[in-house]
Image 1: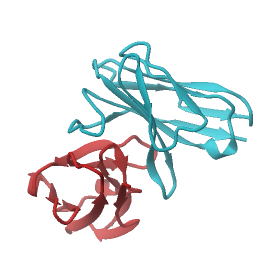
Image 2 (image 1 turned 135 degrees about the vertical axis):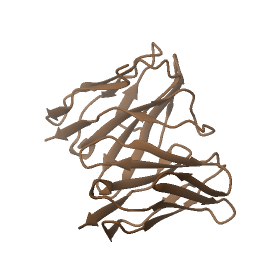
Image 3 (image 1 turned 120 degrees about the vertical axis):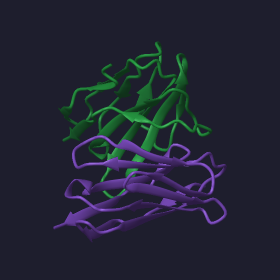
Image 4 (image 1 turned 45 degrees about the vertical axis):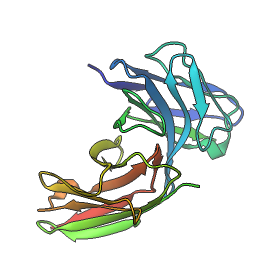
Length: 116
Length: 104
């Protein structure tokens, strides 16, 4: 099993460009989520999904879009990149999820994004 | 609102014991998680507590008091490889992490 796979590992964008961060898991997990990690602020939840066709906003959703057309994939789209979106992004999944979950999260290896 | 607080940095000596505290305020509670994150890597699961008391797992133990909104992670017989950040989490929310440095 590959677990949670994120691509790319590194990306540099110019302000205003758009891009998609890819996330795929092969564990048949229902729950998938995206976090950003900034120094001194810890992991902050951007968007999450409790199953195919269902997505919801987390703490910091502005400037990001998601979709969940399959159980395996949960891409994160930056519509018009801004320097404030410079961060490390992690995709995470669990078998079930949501605020009522007692399931541990499995994380991808992360994407380091710089917006100039 | 939801708030999870933990110390920013801690330093300890190889072979010693260290306790990392976490206080939380959440609307609804479904358990508290601890994750370990080495520099430049992804977080990995360490422990989960949903009932009051101590859960022991080898050199690592985690304690929970729901009435006090308090948890701690106890690391015994510290090794250099334990140098990492330790993240406290509840209801999909994470604390800022405690960076632990283990010195010889």
